[in-house]
Image 1 (tube, rainbow over the protein chains, first blue to last red):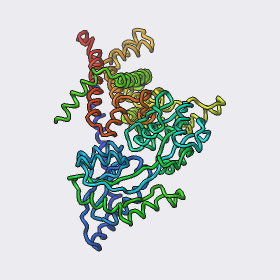
Image 2 (image 1 turned 90 degrees about the vertical axis):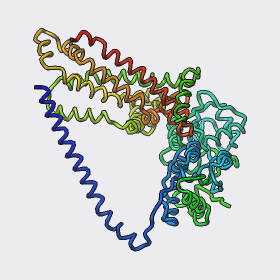
Image 3 (image 1 turned 120 degrees about the vertical axis):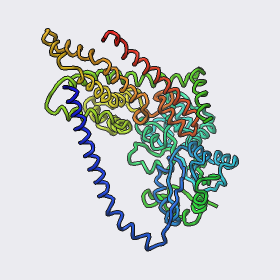
Image 4 (image 1 turned 180 degrees about the vertical axis):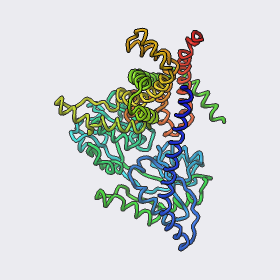
Length: 293
Length: 244
């Protein structure tokens, strides 16, 4: 008796489930239909363009800065034959994706690694695109007293005072830069105050804010998230905080033409102007400084 | 194929290589998920019994809610726990108002990870337990009561009768959290030596492009899960010989 009841319950469940599935799929169709009609007219008016996918592997910090939201549409307007898919990962993973030919073009910021990547034959060339700068941010109270100090002094004060510092710890471009700065200051950061997070820039900024600690960040990501953070800029402007971006088309990529077109376009005057302008309206200052040759 | 073979070899080498950092990560994974599972059982088994063994208005809705809970996306649980525990979250404010001092930080600590994993695993334990309890014939409980069993004795008897299903619920709860990355990454912060567990370590190595190492760590995690699940299964099957 119990079994026959259960059988009925399963049937009822199945019927309800199917009804739901039907309703949702109908709703989906209804939503799509009006969008399709005007779109159908456009290609007739212009040249019908066949688009091919282009995989751009870049870093989470570039993605988090919001630059792609203006850069990618501008590229797709200049080259309507390509549809850009951004994969935002760590610099290490981006280079690995390139090495495995799973990405067509790379836009990353770890110059030594990029040059080695091209030297090993994984990329066809490497071009300078732009730079931004790193800053050290921390709680407004500045418990380690680093405000106005040089980078070397600031790092020394943080390690001496033992105030929480959060490192990206993910072998990213920013992490590589941070390690180089500690090395230059002749400090080996270790101890309970030094937290190696192994996360992206946005996550680490959130962590620094929550833990009332210091971190090294690129200016773009910080400005973009500033309103949600209880962090102030405490150390900036030092020349060692320079962060160079490069573009690399991947050797034998799936979409080699697209990769080359993107690399050529991003160093063009048109793209460089888009980069120079980004952030001016929102933050009163550019986030990236184009420097293609 | 060679990649997978070398990852397999690497995973064996790593596991027996005496790397203290790796053992610490494995230990923390087991500790976090083990403690979470303990609390999930404390919540899920009684709750599963109460819902499974009783008829009340709106029971179907409650069961549907529990079943939905079994599919909670870990990253959403992580996000919610994060927002609750944040310095700009409601608990922080309440603590400050009531206690008159700033709340000690819970975010990016092991307890925060446990809170998130308890939320993920409790519905899993509840859902599978209630299904097991519901399949115990009502006659058994009626008979127990007619023989003068108390409510508690009746409950214990029913849970014992459904023990295989209850053990399955524990296995489901454990499986749901030992493999979970979204929530522990968000509320734990993946801090080396403090909150880094197997899944977040795998994600980190993947992000750095160390695919081989990431895969080797993944194999170790699966191996550990196998050993534990095998233990569950042994307990689950034991006593079977007395049944017939």
